[in-house]
Length: 141
Image (tube, rainbow, N blue to C red; front, side, top):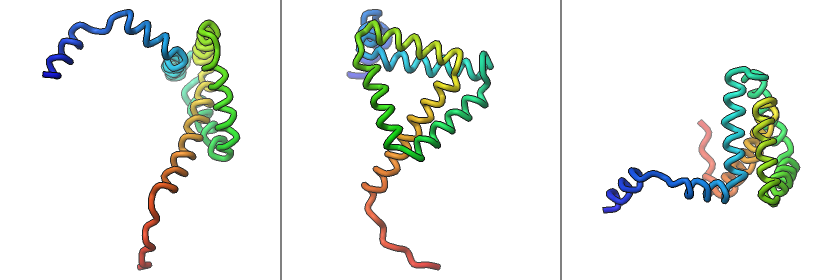
């Protein structure tokens, strides 16, 4: 029964009002997604800098984040807290700036993605070490 309901919804599609309300609720996420897409395309097709530079900066960002995860995490939280707590017009301006940076300087955008990846990696590994019970030591062969 629910399969028919899903089929009917898929056939009717998504209304423009649903898309507009989604974008209104999730403006920073939508702009970040667009910036990731644009920076990836800009890097792949060598518009202003090649993919090698973007990968290098993503790696450098991840290394920095793994070396000082608490400091980087605090700075990233401050940055995102600032951008999320703005008025809607300012959020849109910041989103457009993200996309412009993603077009012309994608390696800077990939550096921030590397920072996010490094901090996430560090904290998920720490979380896994805390939550997984220690195994009994194995015998040496």
